[in-house]
Length: 117
Image 1 (cartoon, one colour):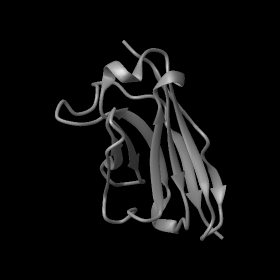
Image 2 (cartoon, one colour):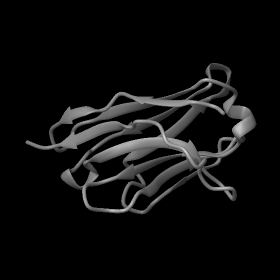
Image 3 (spheres, helix red, strand yellow):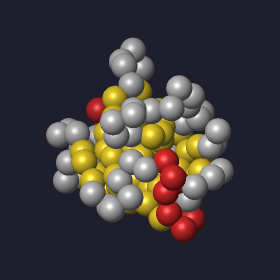
C-alpha cells in the first residue's frame, strides 16, 4: 500500500499562511484524485480540497479562495497552500485518496495546524 506522510504544519497567527506537503511512497498518478482532509478536536474528519490528475480542483466553501491545492506527480507529492488562516482552521490535516472511491482505509499521522494569537 502507498504510504502518505504529511508535513508542514505549525503554529501561526490569524491571517497567516502555511504550506502543507503530502509525500507518497509510490505513484500518486496511479491513485488518481487526491485530497486534503482535516479533523478538529471533537469534530468529524472533513475533506477540504481535492485535485485530480488533470488538475481539476474542488474546495469546501469555508476554504475556497484561501486554500490552494496542487500536486506534482513527478515528485509524488501534493501540497496545500493555506492563506488568511483563522482559528476555525485549527485541526490535524491529512492527505488521502479522494474522488468516487473515497479515502483508503488507512491514514497517516497527519500534521497539526494551530491558528492562534
